[in-house]
Amino acid sequence: MSSPRSLVTGATGYVGGRLVPQLLEAGHTVRVMVRDERKARAHAWSHDVEVAVGDGTSDSDVRDAMKDVDVLYYLLHSIGTGDDFGKTEHDMAERFATAAKEAGVSRIVYLGGMIPEGEELSEHLSSRGEVGDVLLASGVPTTVLQAGVVIGSGSASFEMLRYLTERLPVMVTPKWVNTRIQPIAIRDVLRYLVGSADMPSDVNRRFDIGGPEVLTYLDLMQRFAQISGLPKRRVLKVPVLSPGLSSHWVGIITPVPASLARPLVESLRNTVVAGDTDIKQHVPDPPEGLIDFDRSVELALTKIQSLDVPTSWSSAATAGAPAEGLPTDPDWAGGSLYQDERTREVDASPENLWTVIEGIGGRNGWYSWSLAWWVRGVLDRIVGGPGLRRGRRNPRDLVVGDVVDFWRVEETDDATFLRLRAEMRLPGLAWLEMQVGSTEGGTTTFHHRALFAPKGLLGQLYWWSIYPFHGIVFGGMQRNIARAAEALEARED
View 1 (cartoon, helix red, strand yellow):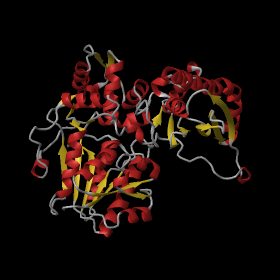
View 2: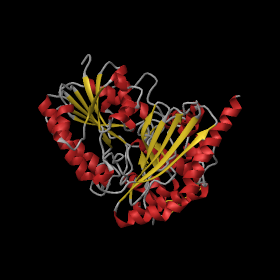
View 3: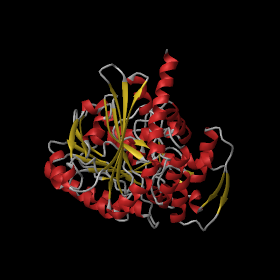
View 4: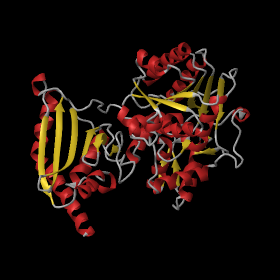
């Protein structure tokens, strides 16, 4: 197809967000299907694509998004969203398969996981395999690309590997560190995805895709340590660490929450080595060959160090995190919405105040009572929340959908307004707003507002129990952000 119209689902996720610009470069007309248009508009490619706002669980939304589409890139998954994610994935795949057939789509391209023969599959790999079966049986020619561990800046697998290796010079490890796997660089995954659009109409099958090396997970950790300039990691292997215990351990050591770590860890017990190289018949290797593990790690670390990570696993919401937007109903509509509002004048330009606000969280911290924030993060991790370990995608820039520790950017506007939605475990919904303004006399103002919509009696008790500390936490935050902006202003003078 010279210029196909391709629909990319999961376009604001890790792979989808990187696939879109590759398709545009290859000459595709691209439509993206997203639940939140603001998250799509935060990407550099947003002005070059059609945006279809809809939910993958809605028949009508799926049918509308599929109109006049030539190639469907199916990149949706529900990993880490709960115990029934397998059924959710199966039902959603059937919905898209039916709509693709009805719309006359020419090809479906799906990225799943390698399915080893003769092994008991993890729930994650089993679900990935079932989704592939549904799409292959759709009546639409389908390419199912089956990958193992994907290595790239921001991928959940890479971040898990990175943090385990960096933070644990001595590791007590389960048996799965000896499992043979065939990692693949994200750049090669994207090349296969783009190339699959042009496969002949009689191709309807699975293809294993992997990099040029077969290694164990222990090999990956030791090689990562070497590339990163770390001493060789000492390893004590024990047979008693179950996937459940291992996932909780991973959840404590790394930013990847236990809900996502568990299916990833369980999948590591399966051998994921390509059973064939038939994909080369349709998407040949580049002249320089596939990217090996060492080079893929170097590329990922370079992206991280240069603050050029376009997408991350954390782009997807944490399981159990609130997704509701800020309530807009009037007060008399029912329910409580508690607020803590503070405004102060700042002896700095609006630009310098915004610079400090936009850099909040992550390594810069929260500008007040660091111990309290640390304790809140630890408590959140204990009850299954994300805690403070997720950090930020970029220490200086924020877009809608970005993670900031246990918050997520819900809205940001013209260097004047930032709204964060809480994703820590709470008996209610919470938001934090920061707004830059000015008086008629030209004085910069800083408006700070914390909001909480309680759920039940526990939510009411929670608000009033922490309310006495607001002056320390939020008052201190506003005061210290103002001081940081004023210090920045003084350095420029």
